[in-house]
Image 1 (cartoon, rainbow, N blue to C red):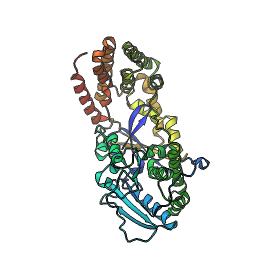
Image 2 (cartoon, rainbow, N blue to C red; image 1 turned 30 degrees about the horizontal axis):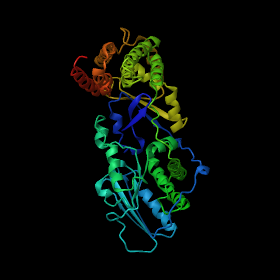
Image 3 (cartoon, rainbow, N blue to C red; image 1 turned 90 degrees about the horizontal axis):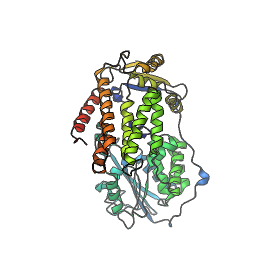
Image 4 (cartoon, rainbow, N blue to C red; image 1 turned 60 degrees about the horizontal axis):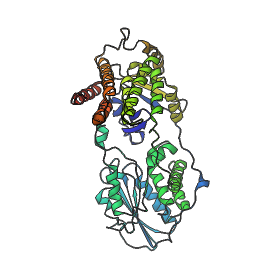
Length: 474
């Protein structure tokens, strides 16, 4: 599982590229999963504009060159090392390579050492302390490990590393588990390398945007290292080695070239979902109209506007309090109940996404748990869409005596915490003062603790209410 930033906040998503195909994810508490089967899957890759590339400035060919590549097993670390080794061999280098894959070849730490020399020396491939010219870090956590950094020295080692964070095993199991500090990991790498020459790039995000998958992130990073002038090889020999490797040749060539462009242009990293408050609210109002109706959306917009005005009275314009209310009130008002799940499955945007990735003839199977994640899942194919249309129409009677799902204990609890939150925010808006602003901000953001479905959600609500009652009345 991976955390994914979306316009609606951070969501959890199955990461297809690291799937081990035991399909245990289908047993998750989520009450509505889908599986897609297709023989017409498409590659969502865009071609890099080759004409925009310029050759990097490089020093004269050295007598020896040493590189350490580190990353996560199963992501292509060894493949990148072998591509470099083959390219160097074609250019007449004497090549020695050593791969340290350990017992966890997929998911564990992997290190490859590469030693190139003009003459055929009997030097071991493994790098010794302070022996590295190029330090390629395909994962920040592995790259920052002391045992891997011992080959670096500030006077000559240059690091090219990704800023893309991969969740640890603990984070996969527990979404609230703290993430290792990227700043600390970067500082550890910069401390023993040449920080003024180091290249840090969000290779995973670039690969997703340009190539449709972060599986190509390592090749993107290799392109960045080349364009920084840190490889004593030509682009022709590297691309020829990619062709010789014979795996998704065109996509990997584009990944290499996109990495070169990113390094060449030094494009700033942008958080595409850091929207202005007006845009954030407008998006959610529109969705709540579709979720329920205009009156329901107006209730949301009215309370967010009250929060904005109360914060502005303190001299804070479109500040964190109003943003927290806008985000968390929407989460509580737009819960994924049966009607909402039907709406999502009928979404034209979702269908376009499936067809774009898997082709127009993709076959979708819906795995539904009528007991909201508490019991067995039932498999439905095309016929399910007729039922979704019925559920979609039933939103007009949501939470009324005509709603067959309204009396479910979890639904009643969800409505209760929604109404409690509205009451709390109204009171905070009336009495918002600078002296208790931080407490108000924490209360406004508190519903972010409410996650999951079924028993998982009930447990998170219990923690949320316990934490909420721990606050002193403002």
